[in-house]
Image (cartoon, rainbow, N blue to C red; front, side, top):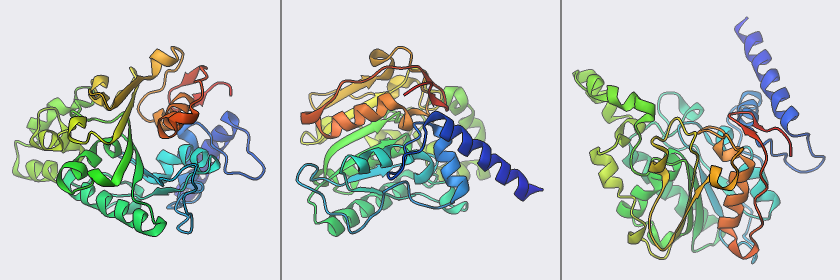
Length: 306
């Protein structure tokens, strides 16, 4: 019965993804839907996102930096099922890893302490640079994956290894998680709860926490890196939504609804959102930036039309 339920769930999600975006014949098909990533993970657990992690890929002159995609409290397949395909189709070398895993293994990443996750990210960046022969990479991170790299910049010497840094719905200044963070003192009032919180990466990024301060998301410390942030006013996880914004001459802050008022993307849909995808492409290659097309985008499900 349990197996049948899993199969039915996978079939429903896969059908939802196909309904959002018809399959292409010979290229990995971006669904532009959070459900598309879920379906991909259920159908083939642990697979890399479309086109990612081709270790024979050598960056072309048009896109000299390999792109490293970093998930949030999820894994690389669920988060990057859309953007990975888009970037590979655009000629980028794309690499992903499910970092910060615990007892759940590759099913769920970004749950270990921030310092542990940051070290793994730093090591992965070094591997990508070595394998591709590139001096620098471009980072695109969602949620925790957009915030934790700052720890690597400030504590593990990653600043000279990064050219462009795109943070999507990232709790750069900590997150209240729509008020759930207010319960953290209650959790930490017991010895077991305090130990669990200390080992939980997302728990460490409540506003004003020591780790949030140590993260030190200050773009002025890395003036040669070009930062782009993308946030949604409907974010329910990285809250307040302004926590995902930075300030500085090397920063471009993007609020999705300023570009497209009918984009109702929330936290989980954001990496697959077509408006976000275009902003990321423009951030990585500003010399060939294209206008953003606005359509109705629903939470989780994606665009009503393409």
